[in-house]
Length: 258
Image (cartoon, rainbow, N blue to C red):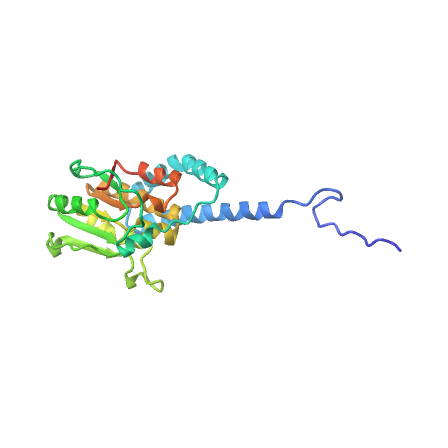
């Protein structure tokens, strides 16, 4: 009895191993997502009212950082899987998991000048709020991006912009994306605002590190361009070591909480 004839796929010579379909599909999907992300970023800049010259500068800055970002991504793919971190829920509940007490820091709060950016490493918003209270009077406006916006009774209401990332105005999801938050921050930063953010962990969990990093980079560029200032409270446990270092490099100054 004759053996059944083996079928050869078109374009593949007999005896040659089949192409690695999984590799090709993964590569194509990554390439497609990269192109989509780049086009979305350009469209976001245009919809925010940037001039063609400003968009060109932003894109050139992104291209200058591209090689470094690709290398970080390559190394991340070769690293062991990142452990799930439960930092954001602890901040939502206002408590922190048991851990050894850090030595108290008695350094005075840094002053925030126009165009400066400051990241405060802390498990819960505390020192950053102290800095916000001490520096708010030096800016014509204060903008807050938070899961639970703090009491801003120390700032006149007409000088405040409060953005809750769980705002139902964000659409069917009942929350705001980093892009939507960026759109709401454009007007106050044009007036020279002190921008306070304590919701980056939420964005990391909901939207992923890459989109969060793009939002942070845009915000840093925006406050530097407009003479605003940026103050961020962040629990670094929400990211692995390499990603946390990458985030910190975006800021002009990084300090620890008390």
